[in-house]
Length: 120
Image (cartoon, rainbow, N blue to C red):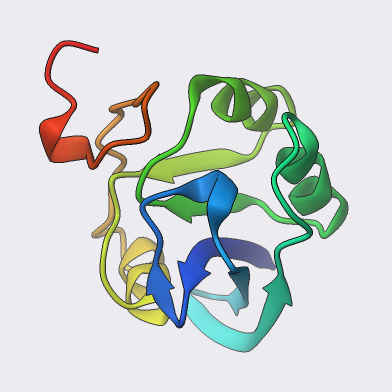
């Protein structure tokens, strides 16, 4: 089983990982979502959210933007990071399962939208 968390606000992928309202957590088996739940974000403290999601058993985190510190912690824990996503949270989780979602790899120190990151 795979557990995918999508940083979201009102069911849509958030551009600001650390400041999202909640995480939509999807359980998937054989490429299909079998369960979904909304987990309220416990708040933004440096280094806290990656550990919080790791404790939930998350294998993949999807967000619009994310700082390099959080990405480093997720990588240390073996959690795949997909950034640059946008749209409806369940839709991006399904796109990931279908192999149609790839990370842009752009890390924004100022948490701007990935299109406008330019030379950071």
